[in-house]
Length: 136
Image 1 (tube, helix red, strand yellow):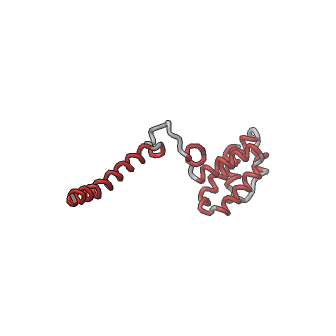
Image 2 (cartoon, one colour):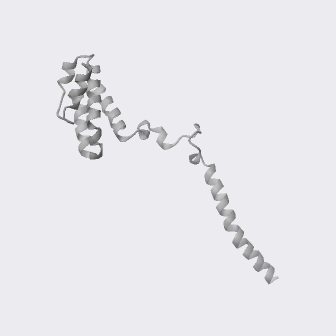
Image 3 (cartoon, one colour):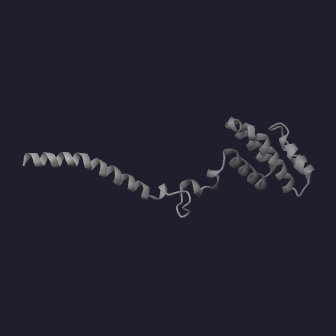
C-alpha cells in the first residue's frame, strides 16, 4: 500500500506541472488580447486612440495642423517650438512640420500667402516661410 501511494505521488508530481502549464498556455491564447492582428472584432487599448498608432512626429503634425485650423498659425508655431524644446528627438522633423504648417496656413486664408506669411517665426529656421512660399 505504501509503495502504491508513493508511485501515485511521483506520477502526479511529474504529470501535474505539465498539465498546469499546458492548460495555462491554452487559456492565455483564448483571451481576446492574444488574438491575431487580422481579427477585426477585437479592440485593443491602442486602437481606441487614433494617435496611438502614429509615429510621434506624425501625431505632433496632426495636432498642430488641427490647432492651426481652430486658432491661428501663431499658436501652432509656438507649440511647435515648445514641443521641440521638450522632445529634442523630434528636431529632425521640425522643418517638415513647419513647412506643413505654412502650407496649411495659406489654405486657411484661401490662398492669401501674404496673410499667412505674417505669422512667420524663426522656428525651425525658415521652414514655415518656405511652406507658405511653396503654395503661393
